Image 1 (spheres, rainbow, N blue to C red):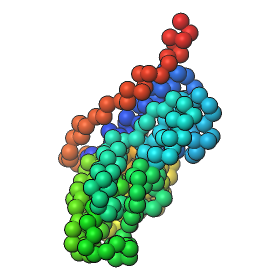
Image 2 (tube, rainbow, N blue to C red; image 1 turned 90 degrees about the vertical axis):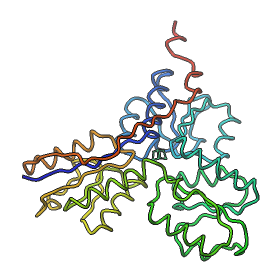
Image 3 (tube, protein in one colour; image 1 turned 60 degrees about the vertical axis):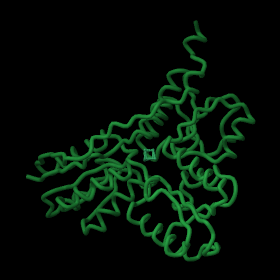
Image 4 (tube, protein in one colour; image 1 turned 120 degrees about the horizontal axis):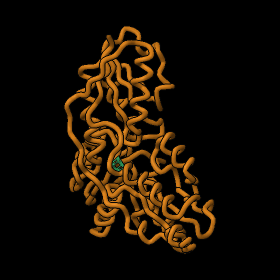
Length: 317
Ligand code: SF4
């Protein structure tokens, strides 16, 4: 009998639930199409489900027709994008996760105080692009301790940092330590900008890997927090794979395995976790257990702009 151990917590976080809910409610209210700038969250299944309901995903605002209801993704957008949408009078619903917005606010505060701002994050990730574009003035992006060493900033300059929300906690600590070692005056939020969901899922995957022979992470390859979960499994010496759903399970991964550790990134729906369990069960008899872990209760309020959308039902009445 093969055992499947499920991480707790795993899967959807409050920011992802809110973002998907925003697109769903906008579609209910105004009908299709609703335009979404960038994938609402980095999960193919979520995107396809919303697309089937009438969401249209575009990369650039210029691809949104005049007057169309437009949703900004959970990752956030640069000020330029907000301004361009406002200039065109587009009805915008901002699904930026409130924890990403909090980082923007914090970054602006540091710059206002005249501090040199460092953003710890992965170049090119949409959240990082958005955060860089939300803060007026220079922001230095670093992704490694080596990049801290190369920063063109004087050692006695007042330095503050903010971080991407979905980083690996340990890697971020190392970068913060490098900042503190190089600069005399460094302030920042410890690793607190890494959001609660990322931290909880990373802690849970460590517990999981202590008991499992193999780690499977349900999530898309674009999903930063999912990729970090897989890396933790690898660091802990377990064969670790990222898969979109049960159809991507390679039976060879299960050779010689008695306990499969299974988790999901913050943008992966639980039904995909269940599809992986079903795929394993189709090959081997399984028992399924969930590890003890934190029960998350955080919920975010929906943006008031949703209420201001014209209702198609009212229009028809
Ligand atoms: Fe928000 Fe964290 Fe979820 Fe990203 S992973 S949407 S920051 S709660």
